[in-house]
Image (cartoon, rainbow, N blue to C red; front, side, top):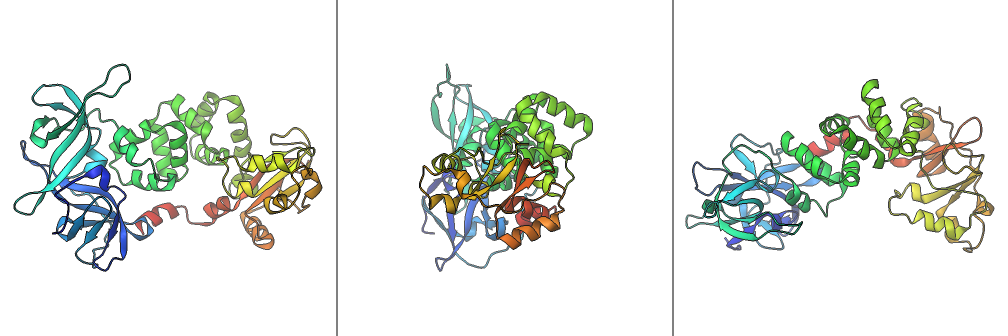
Length: 412
């Protein structure tokens, strides 16, 4: 086997996996080990590899020929594509060992597992032989870091109690929200809730938006009510409304009361509309400008990083007030048109007077509207001529696809 003699698991996460011909197979998502009785180092069984359509499969360590800081190479391109399911007695290193609280055997001092090193023994088997553990620090500083043999640490054979999630979350730092959502679904339920609890509000809000509704409700229900309300505040209003619509009236109203009034109001407005209508799938926070705004101001607004590409594709011009429901809706301006005009030009001078959608327009009508005008976003205007929101193409797709499309994508 032409491979490094030792590898730290956190550094393997996300590495590309190649077959013998150099074709990319997928990427490493975790390492599977079998814990042993007593102080014997766990045997490494294999790696969890994410292949096409986010399917996760198991690859035995015997199939790994190269393991280095840049890639993992397999001995064969023929793989069992059955979806990985964790068996009894198997432990995921990233998912279940990182952030575990342990004791350093020599000193008896508490510490937290921040990484694990695996190496090949004389018989050719891979074992989890080393642990990187960190002692608690003082005054917010990091404590001392130790590189210890597996048998120099105690506490890993006990049931999981008080496990944090900081190190695991660090391995998710470079992933987009959809990938974190998929990773979360593959964790044991208890661990999933620990990670959700440790994510900051904005990151958790983004991840919740990528989860199936059942998982959203379950995770939201594990949070303290004030924290749940805080997360709902930073979600897109349409995503928050969709989630709250699945709760009981009592739970929904209690969470809305705990939210800041300015954040709760657009969500309340969206909850008034019937699901699968333009009003039911729109967001109430598109880019809205007054008639005296310049193109320079419009371009500055669409550069805001929190805007989705669809919502950043156009701006809507309305008379004050500029929060939905606005004053009279005047029209929209596409970003392509804005880029072709002098920055000092008023946006109101380059408007497209495209007929807007009505809030009660059914999903079929919304879909035809997008197809007819080749749009990625569209205005929704009420009978009083006020802009109440905008529908984006991703909203339409979410409602056209089967309810379990995210789960189907995860299963491949």
